Image (cartoon, rainbow, N blue to C red; front, top):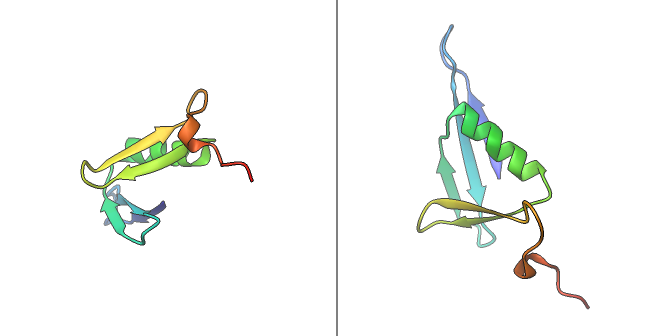
Length: 76
């Protein structure tokens, strides 16, 4: 996940753009509000697993509390 901030004119807030790059190399871009951007950055920095559902434009955050079996690394 990458985040960009584009400056607005003098006295304007500007805008945020988030790009999610999936394992297959697809790029998905969205323009969340500043508050949503702060929440996304916090989730990305936390010990969570983020999964992007492109069909529904939904970012799924797993392991916020506890662990899901499908997020565990398989043992060798």
